[in-house]
Length: 251
Image (cartoon, rainbow, N blue to C red):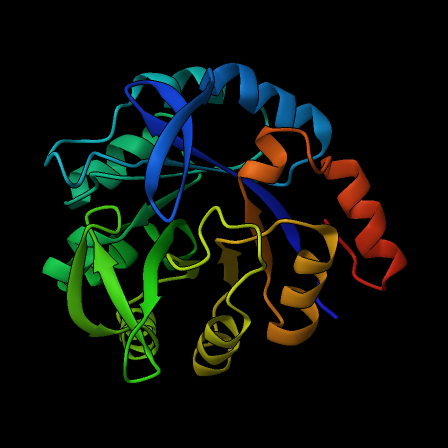
């Protein structure tokens, strides 16, 4: 079985780490630099930062915290939110991001994925898919921080994005976001089977078993979570030990 990465997700709003449920009821958590240093020292393999209101407010990602975090830690940083052109990727990569995540802008302009992958390589280009189950039993893609439904099917969009050059996909279930009932395993499994790039599970982790289920059932490559890490309900070293005991090697 592949080694998996443990990835805390830090949603940023107005320079602060925040957390909500189903993309609503947003509450303040902590300072991003302080929290990043804590996670780095706790054994996190990577950190993901999402400026959660940048796209909806039609502005660029706030870069101040990115530079500060990059100075303080030595694990990879992935940054997303408000990224809409090649120059945005270049700027973030030059200022400490190891990877850059895109969502809304790629749907409006899919060719952006091709441009970025050709300029910087697929390994630095991450697609974030915010998906919610629809009445047809499949999953619709949402943009603008989960505020706006598109006509795209999540699995079909994942396939197209990889063809355009995406090197990794973060699959976030809006239905499960912040609910702590477990990841959307069916969605993860379908996307994992449809593409040949690393898949990161996001949205719904509430206990140790949920992380294990995503690896065993959906064969994901990364396990992303927020609430359980931010509020100390699950410590990263304990999670890694648990997974190891179950036969899953965490990086």
